[in-house]
Length: 91
Image (cartoon, rainbow, N blue to C red; front, side, top):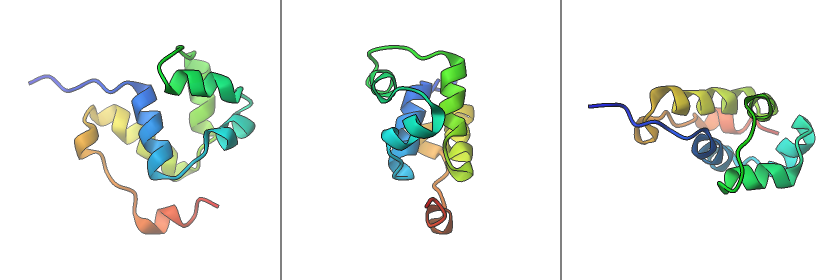
């Protein structure tokens, strides 16, 4: 059975949801236009790997690891859930 390939935009959307991150905050921290992020998240436009990297770097470390675990495991159903103590450090 082949692993299911996860679209990085799906991993991004799931990470933002789980960690209650706002795209507008990522836009400000990454320097990427909020509309560009929205178009990418809604599958209207692709994003360069450099810009995706900048978005990931703008996330808290726990969210970065979570995003990576989803993409690397190729199975969102078994991706790890963040510990509650990690969620409280996002401020």
